[in-house]
Length: 318
Image 1 (cartoon, rainbow, N blue to C red):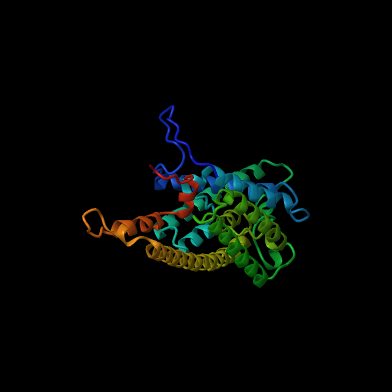
Image 2: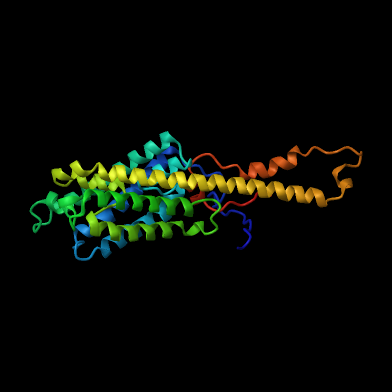
């Protein structure tokens, strides 16, 4: 990894990196709404105008690539959630506050509904599609008789819980500060989402995203709203499991790092010259300032850790 080189700025723009960039809540909500709109537009639009039952791959790839593109484009502003399940996972993991998480979910629902409304309008202009709601039924999440292969409620519930837990786990793991490969987070999350969508479409259009499920249910037949509860409850459970597990891992890693730091300090003190512990006047210097430096460096920043990662690489100030 190359060392960052300080270059005099040629204009008034802020250089990338740890420059104190903190977008306001409205900017973050706008990024979440627009990113979710892109995700739902691609994730629902491609299957709507293809045949997902015979070939679910195009829809799955479209959803995964849309997630990757949206995270690359807007992740540095909001953290790149675009999914209530991921926001809830971040909340349980302690990365975002309750008020901000609720606002994120609201913005995601607005973006998803806007995308579904646009697709519904397009369907109304296609002469070969007499009923736009019936067309939406083909891409709307469902179970039992409304599943592609008649998957029971228990089966779809289990897949949604596992899929949401895996997706949230990949997101939390890839955007963690200690992950040396964190720059690949958009690609890892997008690939994971594409793989899960491939499975979900085959079972019952399981989206692993409550915002997408809600948007498609609004413009589908009445049965979709009756089954929508499952596509909220299951992702919430999966996200909660992943968030708790990640929080436990993070606490464990933090305790291990603290013990290693204490052990290193003890070994350094044992191997040092006692005369070095005193200044020229023979007085022992205060050690509080030495101990405070690593503690301050290890303290997490307030706010969304995923958003902090997407702000750019952190560089030490001289």
